[in-house]
Amino acid sequence: MSSKIRVTIWNEFRHEKHMPEVQALYPDGMHATIASYLAKDAEIEVTLAALDDPEQGLPDEVLNNTDVLLWWGHCAHHEVRDDIVAKIQQRVYQGKMGLVVLHSGHHSKVFRSVVGTTGNLSWGREQKEIVWCVNPAHPIAAGIPDHFCLELEELYAEPFAVQPDELVFTAWFEDGYIMRNGMVFNRGYGKVFYFQPGHESCPSYHNEYVERIINNGVHYVKPNAFGFDIPEGAPCVHPHKVTDEFAK
Image 1 (cartoon, helix red, strand yellow):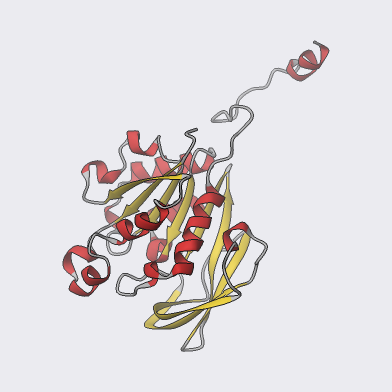
Image 2: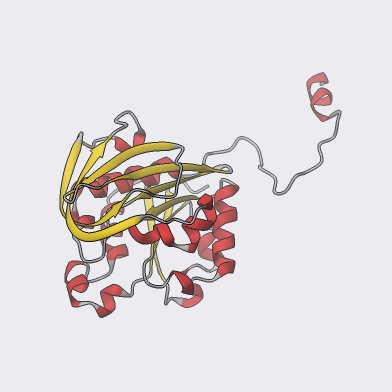
């Protein structure tokens, strides 16, 4: 593994090209905005990727050199190639790559495939959101206050068809709805962090606490430094291998 956490930020990068209100908030794309603050972390090395790039931004060379993949998708989930999704799933399951899924990525092929869910949830108008930290001892919550406010964010609400292994944040919305909006899933030997804020026409990725949470998430889901090789498949184990090793 590299001495730095190699992070690839994948973004559809469609809204920023065609919607003036989104371009005003994120002129170089949401992925570039996220990259601008992750790059300030000396332990992180950032690569940008987008749907319209060659090989949809994720050729084998990029995937095989990614420790943590950040995913933002919305209007073009169906365009993402199934073979790329399968490669991402296997890298996460094998503990070779962590995954951070943002906002409407809950309905992406990647999230649904890796987590094993429909990704269905309730949603509504843009409004005030209060993010509550419900697990302050969790590493992803480091430096985050007990709550913070996003003046404008798209309503995502329960029921959300997931059962996380760890819950870090929940949200309350102005219309009275609630959501488990920051959660971790353990899949195979890998970790997935889902975080809800980040609607394209809202300035959430300029919020200092959202920035800190994403940075913390990258560090938390990065691959472990395994002390032995994790084989693929279900290899046959020699019945005397362990006893023979101890006998030496």
